[in-house]
Image 1 (cartoon, rainbow, N blue to C red):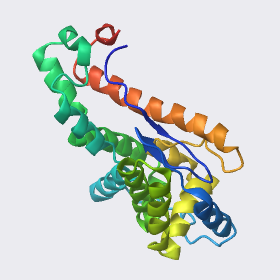
Image 2 (image 1 turned 90 degrees about the horizontal axis):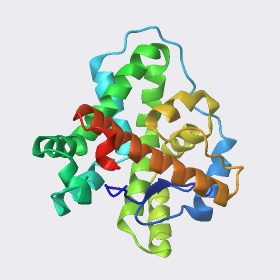
Image 3 (image 1 turned 135 degrees about the vertical axis):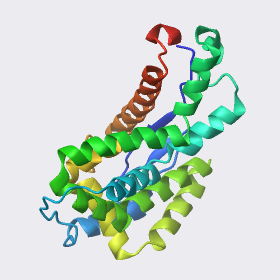
Image 4 (image 1 turned 135 degrees about the horizontal axis):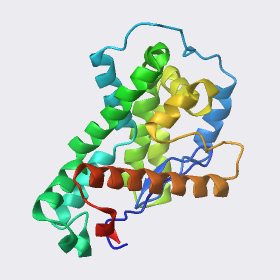
Length: 242
């Protein structure tokens, strides 16, 4: 395949975070924080609710998940640097209108629309847990993860990334750290991790090599799903990318 294939993946090393063309690791500081928070009492326990999920709650969760995995700027940057993106050498396999459609779908706005559709489906299937999930994300999980992702985007060197990771941790409150670790470690939030796109394969008890391989697979899957979904929306057949 000669179409867009960015080097984008997620990895954990106690835990390790998002990577996109540049690598970074959270290192010993975050591993130590993880160990502390695993034994701390959580204030994010789910509280059963049968209330209907409101549109503003759907919008708020969409915003939080986009903040957690900020693909949008990566997509916008790729499009800005290549008028044939995301088809590259296969640009002749699509019409002008199809290419324009793909570029709309694979953008910050298109990414948010896709995420909102997933959130709307999640709200219908899980109304009783929606408020608790949103509380957890707003408690610090989304913002912290997003900051660490952006740190990984911005820095080339492992030392720079480690320093910025420490800065994020130091500037966070205990509540934010607890929210962050609860998101990744609490079985109660497995459905939310699935919705976010991160899933439940990563495990602090696995080796860094195992988690890095899992992360690479997750990242590649996320990007490919986004591309295939965009192709379906734009009536681009699979044959166009092979």
